Length: 165
Image (tube, rainbow, N blue to C red; front, side, top):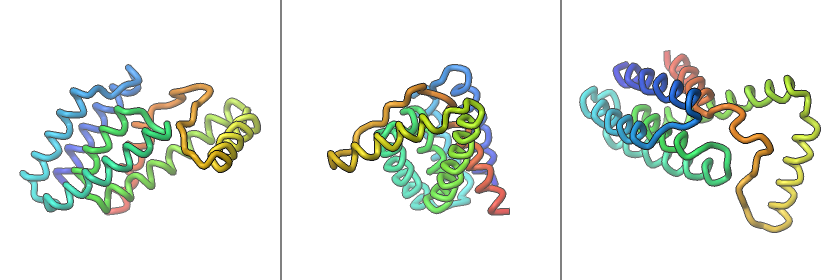
C-alpha cells in the first residue's frame, strides 16, 4: 500500500509537469527513482529483486518505446519509477493497461478530428516501408505530442491497482 501511495504522488507530479511543460525533467526522474528505491527498501512490500527486475523491464520497454517514437524520453525514464515500485509482474500489467488507455485516447482524438482514413493510410505506408526495407525506424508523427503519455500511464497504473483490490 505504501508503494502505491508514493507512486500516486509521483505520478500526479509527473502528470502535472508533463501537461504543463510537455516534459518530465531528468532531475525529477532521478529524484523519483531514488525515492522509489528507498520506498521499496523501507516498506518491504516487494522484494528488492522484484524491484530490480521491474527496473530492468521498464528500462528495456521504455527504450524500445522511445526508440520507435511511441513515447518521449522523459516518459521512458519515468517508467523506471513505476517498474521499481510495482515490480516486474505488476509493471507489465500496468503497461498493458497504459497502452490500451493510450489507444482509447488516440481513437477518441481521431474521432474528434475526423481524419482517421488519412492517418490509417499513413500508418499503412510506414508499416509497408518497414517490411519492404526490413529495417525498423522511428515513426514521424504529423502532429507530434498530441497528448502526453503520462496520462495513459497514470490510467494504466490506476486500473492495475483496482485489479489488485
